[in-house]
Image 1 (cartoon, one colour):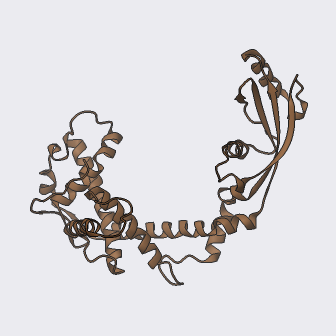
Image 2 (spheres, rainbow, N blue to C red):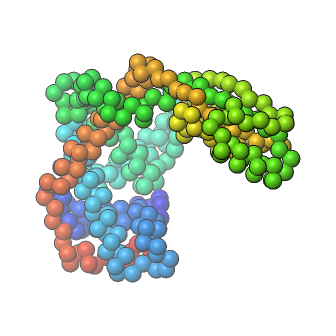
Image 3 (spheres, rainbow, N blue to C red):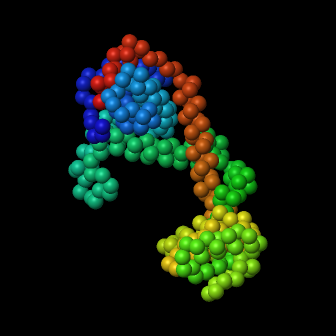
Length: 306
């Protein structure tokens, strides 16, 4: 259901904020969304009337959201048209530009309609966010105080890379499942790994810098995943290895909040900008005029989206 261009004469099927929605535009979005809706409905056979109506409603909702973004982008001079004809014209122009370019073209050399819709929407969203969040007073402007408040409201979501973990590690040789089960029970009964004694057992201590786990060191990444799930004094589930079992106990964690805030303030700001844009677009989509030609909509049959 990808890579199609509708070439029949457009016919109005709805009006969104004063702009027409053609039958071809609705069918484009219905076909684009069909796999998702089909999966949500658990539809395994041909499309029926009820499923088709659900798909049409979903497509119209998508079109309303699309129009809100495109209208905002047009106000910023980023696009000249918000309708489906303009979309197809931009698609053809972009593919022609890529085909005629003498420079290296990164990514796709030719877009399908679906690919270009996603590409253009992502690009316009980024451009609108940048245009409307530059200076104080802009609709999407986020202050430093708002960024700090968002961090303080949920610091645990942001400080993983600025946390140092102190831990104990117990490695015990096991010969069979019975030995592993016996060890598991003794660990469950113990207050700390220091209480566990076993032939060949090795207890060590260590620290892990959460900010150092973002590279290619897979063991450190695995250890980070184990330690972040523990509270101080808590012992991990057994980690099985070749002829041995490993347990970890979190001794404590320290957080450099200044480093965490420095690392994540930009990401938090971007998240707040995205949230504000989402609310702005939702308000525009909800408050704009929306009229549907019920007869034209009913004329779309299940066969149209097969």
